Length: 104
Image (cartoon, rainbow, N blue to C red; front, side, top):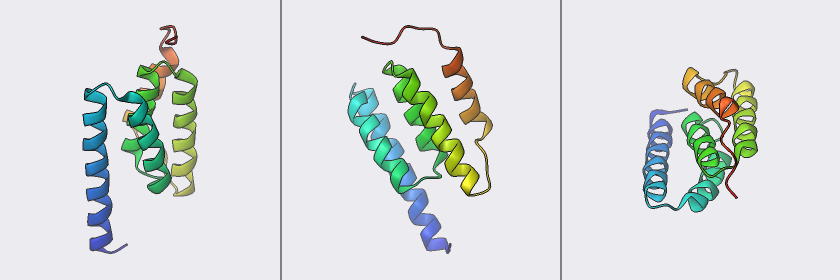
């Protein structure tokens, strides 16, 4: 990957994250989830997208989706010879330990 491609990827990740933070701050969690799902389709190894998607699902009361998102991240990273970073694993562990009831 050349430096221009790296710059494009970095810019894409930054803009998506900023936009999603805006959506979440305005209570548009469903839209943020939908768009994060699209973002991980486009950039399958962008771990920050998985982290934020897991948190969106957790906060929206969709624990099982949050857990499935972690496993999808783990699989995608394994393909590239990597594994989830400590932050991603911590989010996952917190979701596993979360005993709050799911939203109705």
